[in-house]
Length: 258
Image (cartoon, rainbow, N blue to C red; front, side, top):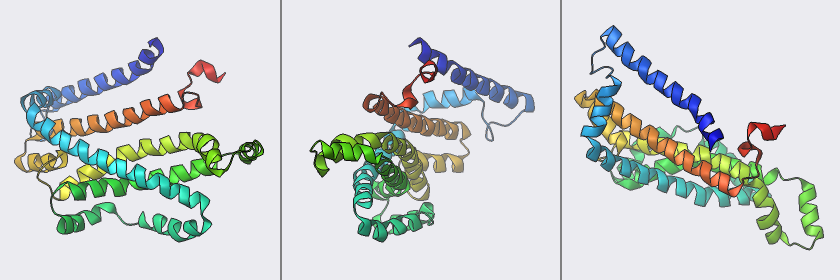
């Protein structure tokens, strides 16, 4: 607990220093509130509009979580097929890579036209943006196992299914969870980006409305909550990672590396 607090101290100090420099800069240069509000103005907007902000935040959070869930449910099985089926890899893998050349935000208007202004196009956009890291990192993880481990498992009488569930997939978990950490952050970006294009709820919608109204404190407050959602979801995956692979090198303290 003490070591965790020590690791957080530089981050807290950096954040406090940023807020102080922000507030002093606004006052020193006389920047109008409609361009850059002071931190206390943003805090006041957070308090005054808390109900509205929470309503829109829950919409964005739901969209991001559903998109991320789809990326996991579809991405991991696809990665398994790519690893174990050369024919499937030759067929699908090039198409997956080529699909990343298409800017996803360009598809958002098409989704709105076809699927309407509801939650479905936002979930689909979150899925498309967060899907690729899950597939790639899971594929890399499944292929990174040492052949000796597979041979040892087979020599002890384990079949393909048992070898996969007890040896190959557990050894791939660090890569899989690394991909999930990237994916969960991108899911938030995808949901907000889709809300920019067309929606009647969500933090992306609120950002568009507040920009048009020049309500900059509320705009910044919405940005704060987008960041909080992203950090919170990322931290949730980190906690899951620590619970699933506490033995991994990424969770050791500095003294344990020596």
